[in-house]
Image 1 (cartoon, rainbow, N blue to C red):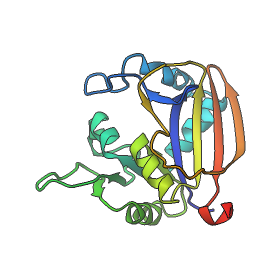
Image 2 (image 1 turned 180 degrees about the vertical axis):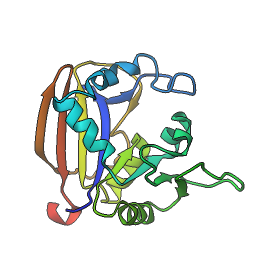
Image 3 (image 1 turned 45 degrees about the vertical axis):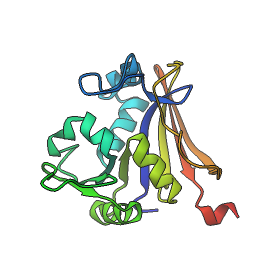
Image 4 (image 1 turned 180 degrees about the horizontal axis):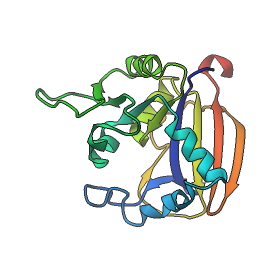
Length: 194
């Protein structure tokens, strides 16, 4: 696949992507910053540096609205001026996102727009809400999970609201680094599971 829609998320072993009480001023929740210690090695030649460079080579971003807001709307530029498609339930009149961001209310339309904007590069997905909506719609092709060896015990889970249908995955890459295992999965399409 030329331009997969790929989820990039750091996650604790017990499935949390943020600690409890994530909010403005405490965007990652209490102790949620622990999930991103691996970014200390993002400039390295090792696995974490490789994964970080791959993430920044994506051609578009799909974000959930909550993630977008907690990230300060990335001031309109997540990385390198690529388009940001913010998946949201509603758009308030007069709420114009900054820079390269735009609001989209339909999941499949969001995926279509992001793929078209990314050209032949992958599309990055951020946020639990966006990930869950895209997975339910069969629009996620791959997941890059940065699995961190910690049990947060509480917070925001990545895969809480997927429904009762199971989703089959194939592990296609595993990279070990200091304090993280980078796992890339290919997501089976619903028609493949039949």
